Amino acid sequence: MARGHDSRDKTSAAPVDAETRLHDDHHISLRLWLRLLSCTNQVEARIRQSLQTRFGTTLPRFDLMAQLERSPEGLKMSALSQRMMVTGGNVTGITDGLEKEGLVVREVDTADRRAFRVKLTPEGRRQFARMASEHEQWVIDLFGGLSARQKRELMELLGLVKQLVQSSAPH
Image (tube, rainbow, N blue to C red; front, side, top):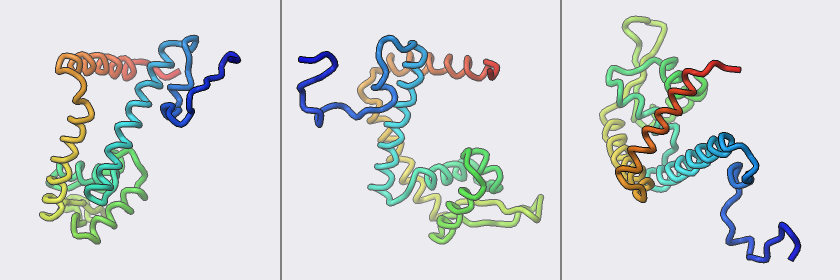
């Protein structure tokens, strides 16, 4: 058989992503970064799929509702945009849809009459509570193959990575 060719059925191969295209002579730091990215993308894809299948909603809508659930007094659109790390236009579009469904309301900000605060409605709170409960279980299930010790170790290591990245100066 020629070098680099594999006679196995290609349809049974794992999906190719940035990480799987690397090989041993790539620097371990690059491989680690791509492994983290691959894991994040896979977890996010599963959560997106579950939100769509179970609740007919999207991850950005869930994220916006989560931000509002943590801030019962409501948030300005600019604060939502910052917290979600998306443009104001994206937040406006999501808010418009949730408002039409009666899940959020816009109220004039008493401190700044030019701005609006967005709040969950009672129905929005009820729906978010149901979604959040199932979301939590999906995440628990996704990491269910790790022992409690492994989860703690991974949290510690990722916490260290987070500190190192935050303290490093941009190049």
